[in-house]
Length: 193
Image 1: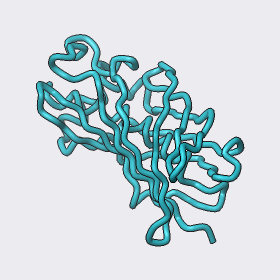
Image 2: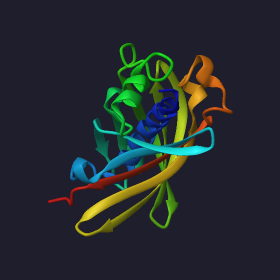
Image 3: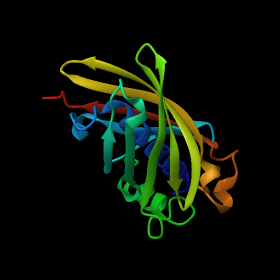
């Protein structure tokens, strides 16, 4: 269905956010991502109605040390076919060529280039996001907190789906599907031993 396609664009943007959050949350090899408590999600508007989605599968290679940010890094890969839109029909459409084209571009990839301390537990993760064969600069603001025996990084930011050709052809009309996709990420890290 056409009304499900916007959700695919959001997932792509969500993958970008997840990569950035993973960079902030992990302490240089001491913490692992608690995937079942973490989430990469997104919200997109189609014809003025908000739709939420998420990705079920992603991997991260993260090293984060607040005292050595220059040595910290985050590399993230999101399985775009794992999109969850709460509709099998919409998910199948999202995998098709106008949206993610997962047959040709199965993974969204993020690699951090720097992490900046913005004070008060806030960080800005800069990096390169590759989606559908296109690479763009990306900066994701996150808040990192230690709570309940875990370190949690949360962030919200917007990306522009058409920068990555997500929603081509008739779906490029931003009156039908907004160009801005709001990505929200919550990454939970295990407590260092």
